[in-house]
Image 1 (spheres, rainbow over the protein chains, first blue to last red):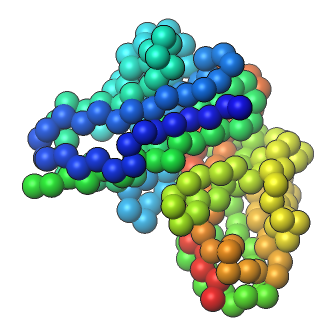
Image 2: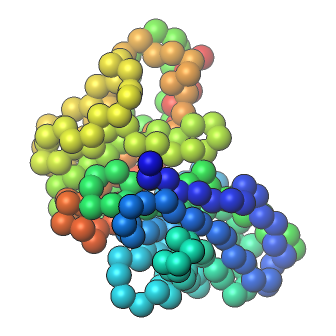
Length: 112
Length: 115
Protein backbone atom coordinates (compact mmCIF):
# COMPACT_ATOMS: atom_id res chain seq x y z
CA UNK A 1 0.00 0.00 0.00
CA UNK A 2 1.13 3.51 -0.71
CA UNK A 3 2.18 5.42 2.38
CA UNK A 4 4.16 8.36 3.67
CA UNK A 5 5.97 8.17 6.99
CA UNK A 6 7.29 10.99 9.11
CA UNK A 7 9.23 9.30 11.91
CA UNK A 8 9.49 12.35 14.15
CA UNK A 9 6.31 13.47 15.85
CA UNK A 10 7.84 16.47 17.56
CA UNK A 11 11.14 18.30 17.17
CA UNK A 12 12.40 21.13 19.31
CA UNK A 13 15.15 23.32 17.93
CA UNK A 14 16.86 26.50 19.11
CA UNK A 15 16.45 29.65 17.09
CA UNK A 16 19.34 29.93 14.68
CA UNK A 17 20.06 26.20 14.71
CA UNK A 18 19.61 23.93 11.74
CA UNK A 19 16.53 21.81 11.22
CA UNK A 20 15.99 18.54 9.42
CA UNK A 21 12.64 16.79 9.11
CA UNK A 22 12.52 13.25 7.86
CA UNK A 23 10.11 11.78 5.35
CA UNK A 24 10.01 8.31 3.83
CA UNK A 25 7.62 7.03 1.23
CA UNK A 26 6.47 3.63 0.11
CA UNK A 27 5.23 3.62 -3.47
CA UNK A 28 5.65 1.26 -6.40
CA UNK A 29 7.33 3.94 -8.46
CA UNK A 30 8.80 7.27 -7.43
CA UNK A 31 5.87 9.51 -6.61
CA UNK A 32 5.60 13.27 -6.80
CA UNK A 33 6.72 14.62 -3.44
CA UNK A 34 5.71 17.68 -1.48
CA UNK A 35 6.29 19.46 1.79
CA UNK A 36 3.54 21.59 3.27
CA UNK A 37 3.59 23.79 6.36
CA UNK A 38 0.64 24.54 8.61
CA UNK A 39 1.09 27.45 10.98
CA UNK A 40 -1.15 27.53 14.06
CA UNK A 41 -4.75 28.09 13.03
CA UNK A 42 -3.81 28.40 9.38
CA UNK A 43 -4.22 26.41 6.22
CA UNK A 44 -1.61 24.38 4.38
CA UNK A 45 1.05 26.22 2.44
CA UNK A 46 3.26 24.48 -0.09
CA UNK A 47 6.95 24.82 0.80
CA UNK A 48 8.42 22.89 -2.09
CA UNK A 49 7.87 19.99 -4.45
CA UNK A 50 9.84 17.36 -6.31
CA UNK A 51 8.68 16.14 -9.67
CA UNK A 52 11.90 15.12 -11.42
CA UNK A 53 15.41 16.32 -12.21
CA UNK A 54 17.72 17.86 -9.64
CA UNK A 55 17.39 15.94 -6.39
CA UNK A 56 18.01 19.02 -4.25
CA UNK A 57 14.94 21.21 -4.34
CA UNK A 58 14.74 24.79 -3.13
CA UNK A 59 11.56 26.11 -1.65
CA UNK A 60 10.13 29.17 0.01
CA UNK A 61 11.16 30.58 3.40
CA UNK A 62 14.70 29.25 3.05
CA UNK A 63 13.75 25.58 3.04
CA UNK A 64 15.25 22.90 0.85
CA UNK A 65 14.67 19.18 0.48
CA UNK A 66 16.73 16.35 -0.89
CA UNK A 67 15.25 13.41 -2.74
CA UNK A 68 17.13 10.13 -2.27
CA UNK A 69 15.74 7.32 -4.34
CA UNK A 70 17.94 4.68 -2.69
CA UNK A 71 16.50 5.55 0.71
CA UNK A 72 12.97 6.39 -0.45
CA UNK A 73 13.36 9.64 1.41
CA UNK A 74 12.58 13.30 0.91
CA UNK A 75 13.98 15.12 3.93
CA UNK A 76 13.36 18.79 4.55
CA UNK A 77 16.09 21.08 5.84
CA UNK A 78 16.66 24.64 6.88
CA UNK A 79 20.12 25.93 7.83
CA UNK A 80 18.98 28.49 10.41
CA UNK A 81 15.57 28.38 12.02
CA UNK A 82 13.57 31.46 12.90
CA UNK A 83 10.91 31.61 15.62
CA UNK A 84 8.27 31.98 12.90
CA UNK A 85 9.14 28.51 11.63
CA UNK A 86 7.31 26.97 14.57
CA UNK A 87 4.53 25.03 12.86
CA UNK A 88 3.30 21.65 11.75
CA UNK A 89 5.10 20.21 8.73
CA UNK A 90 3.57 17.64 6.43
CA UNK A 91 5.26 15.50 3.84
CA UNK A 92 2.95 14.32 1.06
CA UNK A 93 3.18 12.12 -1.99
CA UNK A 94 1.10 11.36 -5.04
CA UNK A 95 1.32 8.96 -7.94
CA UNK A 96 -0.16 9.86 -11.30
CA UNK A 97 -3.63 9.87 -9.80
CA UNK A 98 -5.80 12.04 -7.63
CA UNK A 99 -4.82 10.85 -4.17
CA UNK A 100 -2.39 13.05 -2.30
CA UNK A 101 -1.32 11.05 0.76
CA UNK A 102 0.04 12.83 3.80
CA UNK A 103 2.39 11.77 6.54
CA UNK A 104 1.27 12.20 10.14
CA UNK A 105 3.09 15.50 10.44
CA UNK A 106 5.99 16.78 12.55
CA UNK A 107 5.45 19.54 15.06
CA UNK A 108 8.37 21.94 15.21
CA UNK A 109 8.90 24.01 18.34
CA UNK A 110 11.46 26.81 18.29
CA UNK A 111 13.00 27.87 21.56
CA UNK A 112 14.63 31.25 22.05
CA UNK B 1 -7.70 37.65 -4.34
CA UNK B 2 -7.56 34.46 -2.27
CA UNK B 3 -6.79 31.42 -4.41
CA UNK B 4 -8.87 28.83 -2.52
CA UNK B 5 -11.42 30.24 -0.13
CA UNK B 6 -13.66 28.41 2.27
CA UNK B 7 -16.59 29.65 4.28
CA UNK B 8 -17.17 29.67 7.11
CA UNK B 9 -13.83 29.53 8.90
CA UNK B 10 -15.45 28.38 12.13
CA UNK B 11 -18.68 26.47 12.56
CA UNK B 12 -20.17 25.42 15.88
CA UNK B 13 -23.38 23.45 15.75
CA UNK B 14 -25.44 20.96 17.67
CA UNK B 15 -25.66 17.24 17.04
CA UNK B 16 -28.29 16.29 14.54
CA UNK B 17 -28.10 19.54 12.58
CA UNK B 18 -27.37 19.81 8.86
CA UNK B 19 -24.63 22.17 7.75
CA UNK B 20 -22.75 23.16 4.62
CA UNK B 21 -19.23 24.36 3.97
CA UNK B 22 -18.54 26.26 0.77
CA UNK B 23 -15.36 26.31 -1.28
CA UNK B 24 -14.37 28.38 -4.26
CA UNK B 25 -11.13 28.57 -6.24
CA UNK B 26 -10.10 31.23 -8.71
CA UNK B 27 -7.01 29.44 -10.04
CA UNK B 28 -8.67 27.98 -13.12
CA UNK B 29 -8.15 24.45 -11.82
CA UNK B 30 -10.35 21.60 -12.94
CA UNK B 31 -9.95 19.37 -9.90
CA UNK B 32 -11.11 20.03 -6.36
CA UNK B 33 -10.85 18.06 -3.13
CA UNK B 34 -12.10 17.83 0.41
CA UNK B 35 -9.75 16.68 3.14
CA UNK B 36 -10.49 16.04 6.79
CA UNK B 37 -7.93 16.78 9.51
CA UNK B 38 -8.69 14.98 12.74
CA UNK B 39 -7.73 15.94 16.28
CA UNK B 40 -4.33 14.30 15.83
CA UNK B 41 -3.77 16.50 12.77
CA UNK B 42 -3.88 13.54 10.40
CA UNK B 43 -5.04 14.58 6.93
CA UNK B 44 -7.17 12.22 4.89
CA UNK B 45 -8.81 12.73 1.53
CA UNK B 46 -12.59 12.49 1.47
CA UNK B 47 -13.68 13.44 -2.04
CA UNK B 48 -12.28 14.63 -5.32
CA UNK B 49 -14.08 16.15 -8.28
CA UNK B 50 -12.66 16.62 -11.76
CA UNK B 51 -14.69 18.84 -14.07
CA UNK B 52 -17.72 18.41 -11.81
CA UNK B 53 -17.42 14.62 -11.92
CA UNK B 54 -16.87 12.66 -8.71
CA UNK B 55 -13.51 10.90 -8.99
CA UNK B 56 -12.69 9.91 -5.43
CA UNK B 57 -15.16 8.94 -2.76
CA UNK B 58 -13.33 7.46 0.18
CA UNK B 59 -15.06 5.52 2.92
CA UNK B 60 -17.00 8.50 4.12
CA UNK B 61 -20.48 8.18 5.68
CA UNK B 62 -23.22 9.01 3.22
CA UNK B 63 -24.25 11.81 5.57
CA UNK B 64 -21.49 13.71 3.76
CA UNK B 65 -22.49 14.84 0.29
CA UNK B 66 -20.25 16.96 -1.89
CA UNK B 67 -21.75 19.11 -4.60
CA UNK B 68 -19.90 20.74 -7.47
CA UNK B 69 -22.08 23.21 -9.36
CA UNK B 70 -19.16 24.17 -11.58
CA UNK B 71 -15.40 23.66 -11.81
CA UNK B 72 -14.68 26.54 -9.47
CA UNK B 73 -16.89 25.42 -6.61
CA UNK B 74 -17.06 22.34 -4.41
CA UNK B 75 -19.37 22.48 -1.44
CA UNK B 76 -19.66 19.95 1.36
CA UNK B 77 -23.02 19.26 2.93
CA UNK B 78 -23.23 17.23 6.13
CA UNK B 79 -26.49 15.79 7.42
CA UNK B 80 -27.30 14.71 10.95
CA UNK B 81 -24.04 15.92 12.41
CA UNK B 82 -22.35 13.73 15.02
CA UNK B 83 -19.76 14.53 17.67
CA UNK B 84 -17.17 12.57 15.69
CA UNK B 85 -17.56 14.92 12.76
CA UNK B 86 -15.71 17.60 14.70
CA UNK B 87 -12.55 18.29 12.73
CA UNK B 88 -10.92 20.79 10.41
CA UNK B 89 -12.08 20.40 6.83
CA UNK B 90 -9.80 21.58 4.05
CA UNK B 91 -10.74 22.29 0.50
CA UNK B 92 -8.05 22.11 -2.17
CA UNK B 93 -7.71 22.42 -5.91
CA UNK B 94 -5.24 21.52 -8.63
CA UNK B 95 -4.92 21.02 -12.35
CA UNK B 96 -5.82 17.50 -13.29
CA UNK B 97 -3.23 15.28 -11.59
CA UNK B 98 -3.56 12.67 -14.29
CA UNK B 99 -1.22 14.81 -16.35
CA UNK B 100 1.44 14.36 -13.72
CA UNK B 101 3.34 17.29 -12.32
CA UNK B 102 0.88 19.49 -10.53
CA UNK B 103 0.46 20.56 -6.93
CA UNK B 104 -2.61 21.11 -4.80
CA UNK B 105 -3.45 24.46 -3.27
CA UNK B 106 -5.33 24.43 0.00
CA UNK B 107 -7.85 26.72 1.59
CA UNK B 108 -7.57 28.04 5.13
CA UNK B 109 -9.74 25.29 6.56
CA UNK B 110 -13.08 25.21 8.33
CA UNK B 111 -13.02 24.20 11.96
CA UNK B 112 -16.24 22.33 12.64
CA UNK B 113 -17.22 21.74 16.26
CA UNK B 114 -20.24 19.60 17.00
CA UNK B 115 -21.63 19.97 20.53
